[in-house]
Image (cartoon, rainbow, N blue to C red; front, side, top):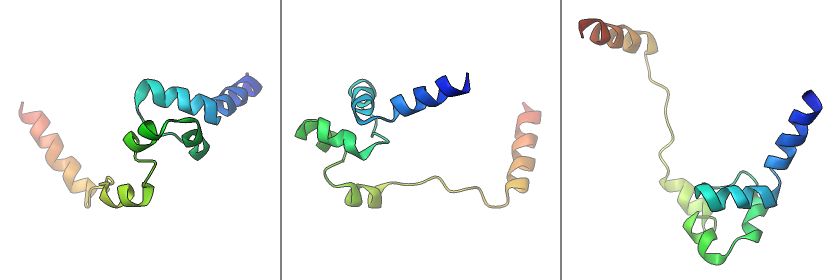
Length: 81
């Protein structure tokens, strides 16, 4: 049911729900407003108290250059086993 799927997604991104998810997973929330529902300690542990500085230290995945060559070599490695 498409309408129920949208309702579920809307529920999952609500600040209150995101706070509950963070309580269980210790993952950063998708809704910035969830931070206002957290303790100062939880905001600190999730780096929500200094997002800009934290983002400077994150290593983001970079796509593999020459993907075709990478796949070719990886397939050779798998075939040799």
